[in-house]
Amino acid sequence: MAIRNVLTKEEAALYKKSRIITKFDDRLHQLLDDMADTLIESNGVGLAAPQVGILRRAVLVLETNVAEDEDEYIIELINPEIIETAGEEEGPEGCLSVPGEYGLVVRPTYVKVRAQDRFGEWFEVEGEGLTARAFCHEIDHLEGVLYISKCTRMLSEDEIKTEDDEE
Image (tube, rainbow, N blue to C red):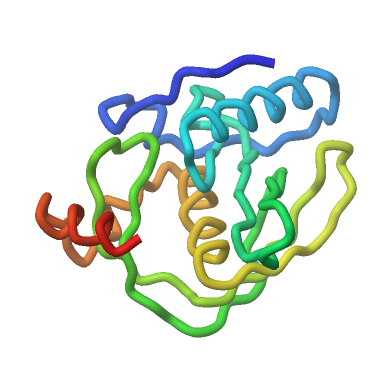
């Protein structure tokens, strides 16, 4: 396993549409494992394969909506598609590919995703709040869309500092 370099918003690859994954082999498993290491190392909530320079439809999302006595865990989504949404909320978003910048983005408060696991088996997963936001954000990456193109506005340094102080 390894930590991969995360591309930043200046990289053209981030604006390209990713291809469907058809081979569920050791190479894919290595990519997913490396992405998990990279996500954990960077303290992120989600990571899409294009962010590490691989234009394939794979994303990881950290499930943070867990009971106090449970550990957060990573959800692997291969070839994901959003099949249901509900609610709407404007909230702050950042991105490992846009370091140090945050903006307000409107996202659903509930999202259901259909995807494949690392072995090619189809499943559905639901997310609320931050997890729902992360599902949308990471799946956007697969379409070559960064959150900065969906922002209602970017946050100032003072607003970012206020957000950090409240946590």
